[in-house]
Amino acid sequence: MVGRIWPLWLSLIVCCGVGGGIAIWMCNLESVASLAERTGNSQPATDRSYEKLPRIVDPERRLEPLGKTIENNMCDLTALVGMPNEYGEVLSEYAQAVLEGIHASPLARRRFYHKDRGSNAGPYPDDANPIYDRDVLVPLVILPRPEAVKKWSLSTEARSLGWRAEDKASENHGSVYGRSLVFEPGKLSENPISVPAAPLGVKIPSWDAYVPEHDTTFFLKLGKVVDTPSYDYVKGGTLNDRSADLHLGNKDGAKLLGEFVTVPAHPENTRLRWVSIQKEATVLQFLAYSLLDGNGARRDRNADLLTNSRLSPYVRPLICERHQPRINQHDELLLPTPLGWPPTSKEWSESHIQNDPHEEWCLDDWFPAQKDACWVIREAEDSKPLQESFLLMPASEKSDRPVFFIALFAETEPKQLLKELAALYNVSADKALNSPETMARLNSLYEKVRDFALDK
View 1 (cartoon, helix red, strand yellow):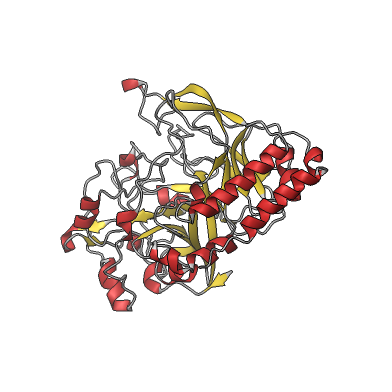
View 2: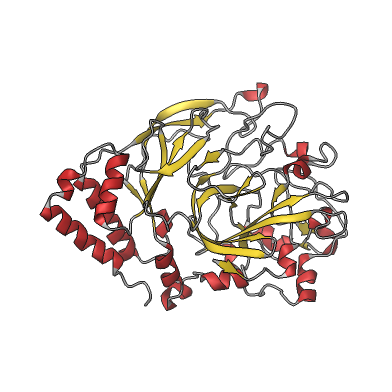
């Protein structure tokens, strides 16, 4: 869906803060707050959504063994956080019934974690020392369809719980959002002060390799920067705009090729994101689904910080032959993780907000519009533990590559789900399809999902 163009000041904010002990950078750039006031697009002072944002953690727990206790649920309902519990129950019951109908046995993958090697090597993610932990179950991550989320987010109950409707997210993304810029540098462009996006929950230990004293070209060569909050301590700790280093839109400055903005549909839901992707004069707006971390341990240890494909060395590559939109070499399915953006450094420090850049592989609106309801991320042939490479494909597509992640749009009629999941779990769906009792039960459960009242 094509939406309106973002206001000018939103297209200029590139506030790149660097974690991990980096010195405070001083500059005389105009603050975002004053720029917003001048253009008449200031954020509402009452928006404190950042206080409700969960702390960013690594769901894969790559820095620790799992221990003796671990959940082995066949269905993952994290994409339904903030939606009615009853809705999650009917979706889960329906998906479980389909799995039971084909007598599917759980799929598992080999799990590894990193163990530091001491002074002889840098810490993760600059180093990868994978230790096999155990085989873990790969659950079905249940995703609500866009129509259901839009309907719910417009309801009175959802709004009272802090849900943002799509139109409100695009009008004013508030104090929680993620932002990435793809650009073509100009003669006047200087390297922005930032670090590459890190795996979820950690910092880049070698942050000092990217500061001006040691490197002045990384982001200019990359042509992309993942935005993070930064504060101007000369001007009272207010939000600071450092995109001026690129001289966007100026003669001999950088040309903006794309801007990715993500806003949580609900502050505590880590999977559902309202997304805006600006390409020149067009803005695409849609609901995206976060699947897994876009970054892992550093892949290239050569002197050149960029890989041969001009991607960050921390990116876990993903290939989808069916659909893979890009701006230059940068994937539109690799979206910035929403961060908290308190208006001042004081509120940022008091709220213990994380401001390290992160990215996640996501499904855009193309996927739920397809006939295929189940999508699988598999490990590619060149994949290594903690330095994975991925393939994204329909569950019905044959492959001998190990399964890493499964996403399911469960609000799909029973025959379609039976066939797709039977292909994924390598079993036959004939017995269930030919059983009047089984199909009657599945149709009844599907109707409960389809007719669930989300717009009250």
